[in-house]
Every structure is written in structure tokens, then in C-alpha cells.
Amino acid sequence: MIVLASNSPRRRELLALGGWQFSVLPALVDESVLPDDSARGYVLRTSLRKARAAQRLMSAGVGVERFIVACDTAVVDGCDILGKPSDSAQARAMLLRLRGRVHQVFSALSIIDLEDGAFEQDVCVTDVPMRNYSDDEMKTYVASGDPMDKAGAYAIQHPGFKPVLDMQGCYANVMGLPLCHLTRSMKKLGIDPGKDVPQACQDELDFTCPVYNRILNGEL
Image 1 (spheres, rainbow, N blue to C red):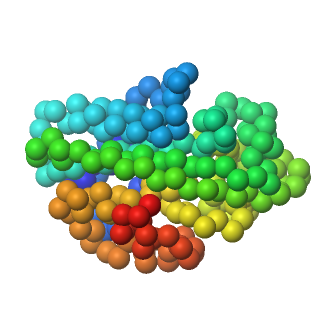
Image 2: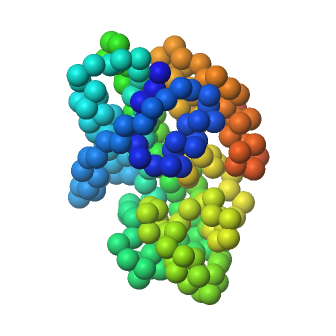
Image 3: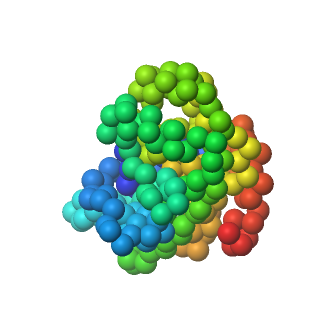
């Protein structure tokens, strides 16, 4: 029933945890940050662009799919939106900047109902405390190549580097798809997940989430 407008393997893995039936239709859009962009405005605009781009690609016929789900995620430090590093030197600079400090990850969801054109948007914000990893750990991680396709030059789930310490927010958001925000948005459009999303997410990510009840209740 869902078209995921993303080529991210992490988003595919996370979406599968909800038990929704989905196909994948990557949507390439301009993700440039504008001079006056706020983090919230940037991710909202970019996620909606992805959803609309996928909608245009499907204009020949909807078929069995009814909803398009798009998501955009940004790593934000202060007033700066950190993209993907262009080379190993930039990856190292980003990791140095974030080391031992708290930054934020913003994700925006845009969901389009192909039947009537209605859409929902939601934003998740997570404070991310980075541990004080050593220079050698950082060097090894950069050399692995893993940071190169990651905003902020890190993956929270990396089993060797483990860059984040004692996070109290949504883990799935930092990976790129806030599942409880998606669940509550889909429910507004009349669609329940096929599984217990918070439990499936926590089991898969081996993380005890302190905020899922508040998210599903609309508090966050």
C-alpha cells in the first residue's frame, strides 16, 4: 500500500519493522540548503519535494499503492546543517566538531494519499550526545569509508565505532526514519501498522526507547 520515496537501505529496513506492505521508488530532488533555511523548514521542504517527485513518477497510474512516504533527515549543530562529507578530510572535520558534544537530528515525514491528494507532515527532533571517541578510533572509522554517505559523517548503529552515548530520544530518527511519528501520521490517514511498532523497533535496534508513548500520544 505504501511507496517509499527513498533509496536508503536503512529506511527500507526500518519501514519493514512496521509490517506495512511497501515498494521502493527513489526520488531524486535538489537537496541544497538555502541561506535562510531553518533546520525544520529545510527538512519539511525537502521531504515534501521527494514525495511530490515520486507522485509525478507515478502519474501514469496508481496501481495498488495508495500512500507515498518520503523522509528527509538533517544533522544539525547549532545553526549549521551538516550534510554528507565530500571526502575523508571533511568527514574527520565533522567528527571532530561533534565529538563530546550534543547536537540534534531533524527528520521530516511527508505522506501523500494518492486517492484524494491529502497529505500529512510531521517532524521529529532528537538530541544526540556524542561520546568522546579517541583520534585513533575516529581515524579507523573514517578509513572504513562508512561516514561517506552519512549526514554528519556517522552512523549511530555502527557496531564498531558506536559514536553515541546515553541517548534519551528516538533512535530510529537518527537512523533516518522516525517510526512512531510515521505511525501516528499514518493513523491520521486511517492506516494502522501491521505490528507493534515500538516493540519491533526496540527489539531490532536493541534500544530501550524512553519516548515512544509520548510520541504516539502526540506530546512530542
